[in-house]
Length: 268
Ligand SMILES: NC(=O)c1ccc[n+]([C@@H]2O[C@H](COP(=O)([O-])OP(=O)(O)OC[C@H]3O[C@@H](n4cnc5c(N)ncnc54)[C@H](O)[C@@H]3O)[C@@H](O)[C@H]2O)c1
Image (cartoon, rainbow, N blue to C red; front, side, top):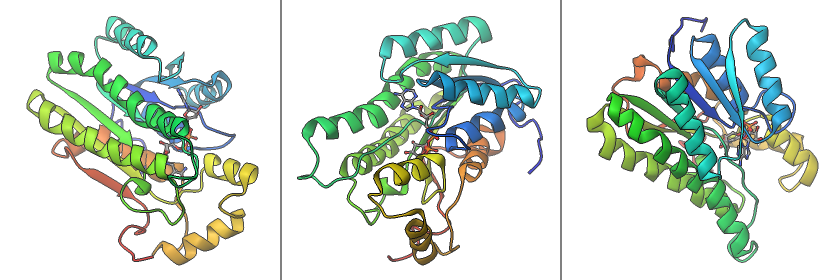
């Protein structure tokens, strides 16, 4: 798909626009693609270096963007960011929420504090961001919210990951609640659901913890469990995000766009 300015003039906030490690994660690919497609990009991340690299890549393609270093768990900082976006740009057209992390473990293997921390980062932060953008979107009678979930939120991923899975399941319901409640105000809310992806987060985590085996093991898992036989990448997620944010998806609301090479459709 070449650039067709699908987001021309749209003010798009991408939360988690850096990358967990060098390379193209879901957030960085989405941020760069949104800018390429004409969005007035507001790139948000808590890691200033990762964010600076995304900005560098956006600018290297001749586009502009505003960079905001903040922690999406900080409700005051998120509310302030949205206020400033409205003051500078006149409103927020797209909120793309990409932040998400998990730690492996079953119910008796992780602490309550660790469970809570995963809900806090993945789900409560999404709630906070939605609370911040929705009033302005209602006022203008338009807006798009896309949450990046995971196939782990729809079925057991094959390894125990209770905090992550429950938080990702909650994101789907949060998007559906918003879709129903705010659809009449012209607002669309959906969950983009990636499956087994070859992104820096996964490669980095595997290299660090080795909990899910080596990279070769992950590739073998994908070969067995994904009908297409391999993992996806950040650009697969980015193009799905672009579609959901664009006018071409104007009738898509309250649903899940699964980007998993057929993983969910296949029995393990
Ligand atoms: N990588 C995969 O295989 C995979 C699979 C399914 C779903 N997902 C989901 O895709 C999303 C992106 O994953 P990714 O692996 O591509 O990561 P990514 O490379 O897009 O990095 C996420 C970014 O979020 C930032 N971030 C983390 N905590 C933050 C906070 N509190 N405030 C602000 N920014 C914060 C990080 O600094 C990082 O730059 C996540 O929601 C993840 O759960 C990933």
